[in-house]
Figure: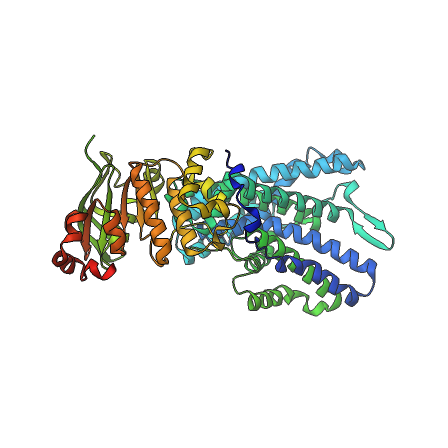
Length: 340
Length: 241
C-alpha cells in the first residue's frame, strides 16, 4: 500500500472540501460590472488587459513580501530596494544585447527580456541574502526596529543607485518587437502588456505548484501558519526563511524589470513609489497568503484602471478605498492564513 | 546505556522576568509511560517546552539518551529522536491531513506499513486524508497531532494534555491508542489532567506544583493513595471515575 492508495477510504462519505471562491470571483465580477460603466467594449478590453498586466507585475513584486511577513513576522519596508535594483541591473544585460533590442525579431526581443530578468533575479537574490544577514537578522521579533532599519536600508540603497548609475532618470528602450499593439476588432492590447500577463501567470502557476506539490512548499505554508511547530518537527525555519527571503527578493527583481519596461524609465525611487501599493495588496490578500496576494493585486489594478478612466480624480485614492472596503468585509484579508 | 531515557537535573526556566521552573528534577524510564501531573499553572507545559528547547533552560541540564540536549536548538532536539505534541496540537490547519503527515515524515516517504498501523489506531485519519486539517473536529485534530508524532519511529514522545476538551467516548479511544502505543515499547512523557486516563496509562508519575517536582513514584501507588492524591493534587481520583 502506498500513501496515495491509502486514501481508498469510503470516498462517498467524505465531507466536501470547501473552497472559498468568492474573493477570487471578485475579479471577473468587478471586470464585468465595469463593462456597462465604461460603455465601449474595445475600451473596456484595453483597460482590462492593461490592468491585468499591471496586476501581474504588482503580484510579482509583492508575493515575496507576503511570504516573508507570514513566515517570520518580518515587516520589510525596504522591499522596494529589490524592485529598483532589479530594474537598474537589467541595464547590465541590455548593454551587450543592444543589437537584439533594436531587432524586430520578436524571438530575440523576448530573449533580451528573459536575459534582463535572469540578471536581475540573480543580483537581487544575492542582494536579498546580504540584506537579510546585515539588516533583518539583528532585529528579528522587533517590529518597530524592523520598520526603521528596513526603511533606512532602502534609503541607503537608493543613494547607492545614485552613486552607481547617477541621479537622473534613465530612459529604457522597449525592444522593438514588443512595442505596438495587437488589434482584435476595435480593441487594442499592447504587446508588452500581454507578455507581462503571460509571464505573471507562468510565475503564479510555478509558485502554486511549488507551494502545493513540493515538500519545501509545504514547509513554507506550514511555517507561515506555525513556525514553532515546524521547528519542533525537526526543520530549521531560519534556513527556510533565508531561502524565502532570497526568492522573494529575486521575484521583486523580476517585477522590477517588468515594471521598468512598462514605465520605460528608470528612477532610483521607483521601488519606494510602489512600496505602499505592495503593502495594500498584501493586506487586502491576507498577510502570508500567496493566492490572496494574486487576487489582491488584480483587484487593485482593475480598480485603479477603471477609476482612472471613469473618475480620474478618485484614481489616486482608489487602492486605499478598496482596502477599506475589503477589510470591512474581511478584516483579516481575502484569504486569511490560519495562524497558531 | 542507562535505564533513563530522559533526565532533568535542576532545570530552571525563565519566561521574560517570570521564573517558572525552580529546579525541576525527574527521570523518564526507558520504555515506560510517565505521567506528569499537577494543577493548572504548575509548570507542566513549560517543562515540556523546555525539554524541546522552545524555551531555553536558564540553569540545569536536560539529558536525553545519555546526551546533554539542554542548549541544542529545537530542530536538533527533534532530530535526536523526540516527538512533541503541544497542548494546542500544533496542526497546520491550511494543509491537508496527508500534507501534515508528509511534513512529519522527515526521513522521506511515509512507510506504508506504519501508515496502515496508524490508520488502525485512528481510522478517521484515513477517511479525512485529503481534507484540510482545519476542518477536522477537535478529537480528529488530536488524533492527527499524535499520528504526526508517530509517523516515524521516535525514541520519546512528549504529549501535552491529549484528552483536553474531548468527549468521553473519544477519550476512551485515545486511551486505547496510547495503550497500543505503549505496547510498542516507545517511551512516553504524558501531561494529563484527566486522572482516569492517568491511572489507566501511567507506569510512573511525577507531580508538579509551583514549578517544582513534589512527588515521584509509581502511578499505581498514587492511584491507590487517596490521601496523597488530596495532598498533591487537591482532589481524589474517585471524583474522576
